[in-house]
Length: 232
Image 1 (tube, one colour):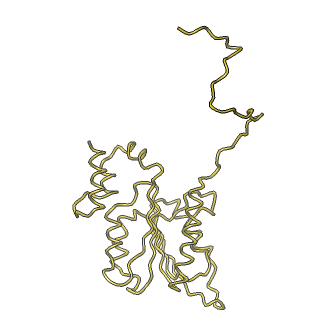
Image 2 (tube, rainbow, N blue to C red):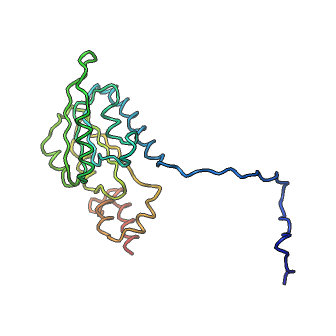
C-alpha cells in the first residue's frame, strides 16, 4: 500500500535522461481548415496529365466522379485543374456525376472555358457532361466508341469510398485488347478503409466494390477475402 500523496506537491517523475524545461506557453496548433490530401491529389493528377499530353500531344479525359469534393475551394477540384491546365491538348472530356448539384457545377465550369487559341495550335474541345451512376453509364460510353483505337485515353476514378464497382474497372481495363489501353488512376481510401468497412452495413456494397471472386484473378481472390472476413 503506497503512502498518500499531497496533490499540491506531486513527486518528481523518474527519467532516464535530464529533460529540458517545458516551453512556456506550449505552442498551439490550429486544425487544418481544408483536407490537404485532396489538394495534393488534385495537384498530382494535374501534373501527371501535364506530362501525359507532352508525350501524346492529344488525349481524351474521363472522370467518373467529376464534381468538386470541396465546392468552396476550386483549387482542389481536379476536373477544373485538368480543364484549365496547359498545354491544352486534351480534345475530349467525359464528365460524370450522380448529384444534380455537382452536375450544375460541371455545367458552369463548361460555360467558363475559353475558346482554343489558334496561335498555340490548341485543338477544338468537346466536353460531355452526364448525370447518373458512372457504373451504369460507363457501358454506354464504351459501346458507343467515341474515341478511336489510337486515341490516348485517361480515366480518373476518384471515388469517395465504395462508389466504383469492380465490374466498372474490368470494363474499362478490357475495353481495348491491343494497342493503347485506357490508362486508369484509381483512388483507394487507404486512410479510412478499415473504418469504412466496419461501418458499412450492406454486404452487397462491399461485394460490388471489390468483386465477387468469380473470375479467379489474384485481385478477385484478395477482394473475396475482404468480403468473407466482413461477412463472417
